[in-house]
Length: 130
Image (cartoon, rainbow, N blue to C red; front, top):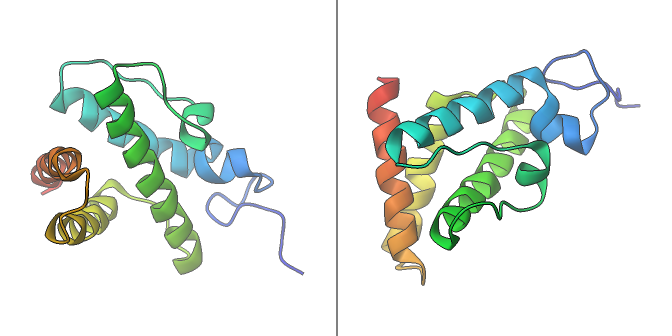
């Protein structure tokens, strides 16, 4: 049977909270993303496990939407890392997001201005990673 221990840190039980946020490898990932976000825009953003798992509603509507979209893609990326047996990294997340956002912008999704703004943020992160 599969081990109940986290595949990423190999120390704790892999609960939903642990898998998406509390694992030291995943928490580091989230804090790196939020640090980049705080350098990119004028607000000081903090996130908690509850924010990542459920919904951020602490800021103005546009920033809430922006952070919630990042959280959705971040959770998907963390799941992909689990499947590929990799530790989430800011550099790989940037590459993943650039691909995902380019596809969304090309198909002209209904919230394209928000996705273009997120694309600008991810592109800025990309220049910080290099």
